[in-house]
Structures are given as structure tokens and as C-alpha cells.
Image (cartoon, rainbow, N blue to C red; front, side, top):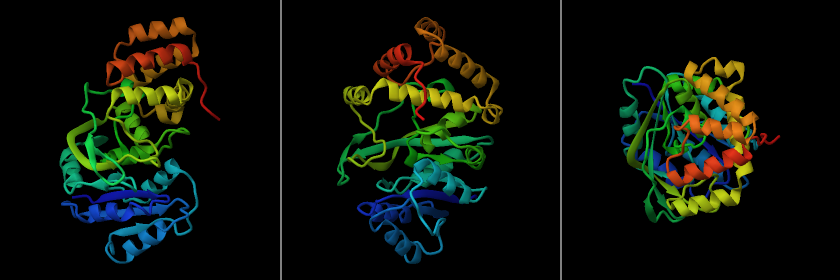
Length: 312
């Protein structure tokens, strides 16, 4: 069986790192190797990782950048992915979460037999900073497709496993600025017609704290209020950037014809006025998010701010 390459980018994570590393060692799937880099931490993160590499993780822990500097999450994970063996399953990791023991085993089982690109992800137990469980993340309401992947990421990074075909696809590309590695992987795999496997079991304890890069919220109302505070222009700029990037010739050639055709119709609507965008929404009834309230908020933003330009 191919190994599992766990990819971990570390940045000022000393408070939680050891608990996560312990959860790697507790995995029921033992055929794994950790590839890591420090993204310019100012705390003891790199020292913790070097100690793990020399002692508890000896023989299955590889630092890929001995002269760390801050290059950002997306590029850091791109370097880690380049360093992983081409035949490995890829597991993204965040520095502050704790995996349940069966996480890698369940992911391997789900991906076994998948021929083309395939992405596995799952639900999580949401916790506070001290790992007190607040409840599970929300289940799926509807089966996602490429259209929905352009407006909502359902593949939470630390739950994701990629098979070698998906990893090869992601390895040859870079996301647009502002799009993280998990959303990019999710959208691209669905865009080429790959398999999306969602596990309703919770595979990790997902800490919610003020330093989360993204975070998750169970309450639909709270999620909506947070989205409104962030503002429509920021979200729509990311959406436009994602659409524009996927239509670049070196990327669009990999997409299914149906995916390319949808992107072209979407780009035309985004470049038009409110009337053109309204016609698009009426025609494309499947262009929705998981929950109805989120869908209506997105539709309002799409109509009013659909021509937002990506941030420089």
C-alpha cells in the first residue's frame, strides 16, 4: 500500500503542537511519514518539531526547509506537496488540532479503489481552546458539485486526504491569492470530474480560538453575522479570482468540458450588469450553498457585487 504523507506547515504553534504530534503517533494507520516546514515562527515551534524529529518521530519525520522564512500558508503547503513521494496519499494537517486514532485508516479505506483524482474529507468535533467539545460540525444537506465548490469550501483542510492522482493534479498548479490549499484542492478535483468522498464521522478535534486561520461555526445565524461583518466585496473578489484563475489556458485544459462551459457562462455573468447576473441565477438553479439562508445571502451578494475585482 502507498504511504500516507502528512503535510504540516508550522507557524507560532507551540501551545498546541505536542498534542497534535501525539495524535499522529496514536494513529491506527502506521504507514505514514510527516513532512513539515516552519513558516518563520517566533516561538519554540521549530524546536518542538526538531525534538519530535529526533526522538518520538525518528525515521518518519522530514523537515523540508532548514532555513525557514515566512512565505504564507498556500506556498508553504505547495512546497510540502512537492516534497512528498508521488505515490503517497496526502493528508493535510493544521498545527492546533487533534486527530482521532482512526482518521488515516478511514481515509485510506475510503480512497481505496479510486482510479482517477479523488478527495476524501470529513466532519469534525468543534472544541474550545482547551479541547472541550462544543458539538460536531454540520452535516451535508446536499451533494456538492463543481458549481457549488466555486462558492463554498466543504473540504476542511485537516480532514482532507488526496489520492496520488489528485495530488499530482494539485502539485502542478497554484491557487490564486487568498485561496487556501484545501479549497483549491476541492474545487480542482471536482472541476476535472474527480471523486468527492465525504465522511459523516468526525475525524478530528477542531480547536476554535482567536488565532484560527479560518475556523468553523455551527450556528447558521452566527455564520451569517460573521459573513456580513467580513463583507460581500471581499468574498466576491475571492470568487472572481477563483473563476478567473481556473479559466487560464494551462488550468482549463484539465477541466471537464461541462466545467469549462459553466465557468465561461459564469464569467460572462460576472462581467455584465445586475440583469445579466439575475438571468444567470435563474438559469443555474444548482448554483447554491449548503443551507438555504446562505444561498439567499450569496445570491444577493452575487447580484450587487458580482463585478468585484480580485485584490491586487
